[in-house]
Length: 395
Ligand code: PLP
Image (cartoon, rainbow, N blue to C red; front, side, top):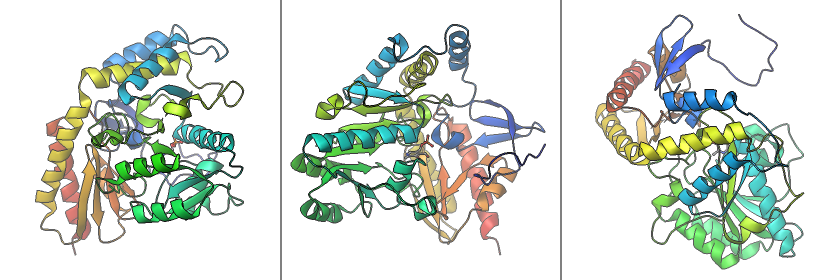
């Protein structure tokens, strides 16, 4: 049934799915599709993971929600797991990526006011994506998602991504800066991987200036790039942030997000400063806790690192004869294939060929398959997508 009662916010394909298992989805006619998008980096454990499904059923039959005015043991356990894995100190739980980033922005502003800066300003990047609330769309470096929503929120200054000279320049000239908000790899921006020293240099500048380094790991976090968190690729010197936001894969489809903080930033929010009715409820936290356990038990960050390398290598081989491919890049299972021309129609062409993909920044094929993908499924992604790309370029 076609409905026009939904607001027209999405350009939807004429496709809907009735069930899923692992890396596969089935449509209403029971045709199978290999899912190389995982709900945009959400279903890291794939669809209908048996352990997770069992825990979801059990917790749903036990307790969904109480309130943050009581202690929530599942929330405390999840916070312990996340802080142990990330070496951060404290966590605030919300329901979406945008909400986690709003929390980060609020912490940065409070931090600034505590230092006596009455117009605290956050450095943000061209090409970034941080969400659709007013503050997060203002922070995002994409004019399309801001247009029509003016007046935008004050307190942001924008510089090019992966440009340390630009960061040093604002550091010299803008006394009101309190934080830098950055994605370790830009996802919506077209799988943009910065230089190897980028995060370490941002860390050094933030230390020198006493700014908060705030990493949006909503797409990159939780084993997606072959480390638990993408900042952990940078080992010496380390680039541990002061604030890190997570969402997407944390609940594998159950809405939950987290804003983690370390050092002085961990102590900024106090009772009455911030809150969320649903944030960190027993159900979402039990599910997210189980997601973390499975990621750990199945050693998925190592699997992701290896399989991602393999897929990029295979694509380089298979796509080498095609002239219109300008780059194949990424880390772990966050993979971008850039073409020399706009290619959004590839999404439909690929779905017709049984493979679900995404195109972002107009000409970058984005692959974010489930982390539990097998090598055989990886081979199928390469085969199917190569065939579709060849058809796209065929005269
Ligand atoms: N930050 C990044 C890096 C994202 O990729 C996204 C979503 O795509 C968001 C923030 C916003 O998350 P949400 O849609 O859950 O608000």
